[in-house]
Image 1 (tube, rainbow, N blue to C red):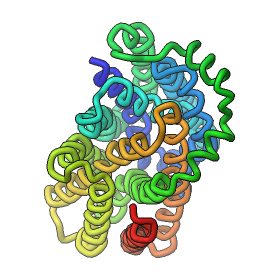
Image 2: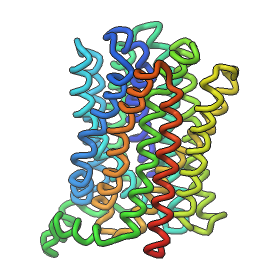
Image 3: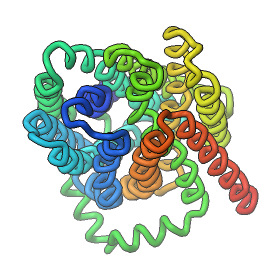
Image 4: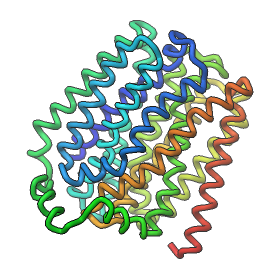
Length: 401
């Protein structure tokens, strides 16, 4: 039950954020913005999430999983309602910045919840289930919101999505404490921290000496760069380059997220059962598969010779690999850090992810604006993923990780 509640928080977040991005062709038409400007939404959203990531992890370590989920979910739900009222695109970018603050509380809260409630033998699989089920929010958001956005307007759809987010936060507030196996009392956690004299600066100093942790964080940037580029621009790519309607383009994005729904628990189980818990090997395999699929899109799909069903299959497989990465990544980060520093360690890790998110999405769009289509964007993305993976392999050999 606790895994379902952890997943519910992700469902509410991803349904709203990815659903809105899936409706970007409609937003772009209303505000007459370019591809680079459209990519700025993801950048603003993750910009705040990046700046406060470590502090958010520290906050979750102190206030506990339940409060982190409730506060983060309520912020995102409220911001979506304000999105629907925005008169200009710049206001939406500012609201995206605030939305990222709420999201920053969700990620360490879910990771901490899994670490508190699941044994180490089943942890990667459980983390995959929590994040995988949560990814179904993006699936439904990108499949349904563009469709209903065409019928009733994207603003009306966002009102419904924001209200759903607030309801989920209320349910977690009322139910989580009854089903959690082990959640330390926030007051006791604060007292313990004060007694031990541990400060954020001391925690960071200790964690930054952890070379396996930092190398793993660098590998996590693969996920941030790929996720932001693909999720921010897939709908526009399918609509502009391949001439699909906004509704069909939304289905293409939903296929990407559907792959993630199956990918996260699958790769967690594969790592636990097949790879013998070798986390870094699993992450490198995912990075390699993701790069290969990106090059496939660049070389085949952009020629427009594939049917929609084939394009859906490629998008699904791409999501299975790219979106299959975060749960395994966060499990690895949690296991490489002391239990009392899980939140802060997660904060450090997501900085690497979100720096990639903030920079990649607008650059991916800018290349499209400069060249007239997304072909060069896809090739550039694949090249970056390969270079990061090779760098990580070299560092692992150097430090014998």
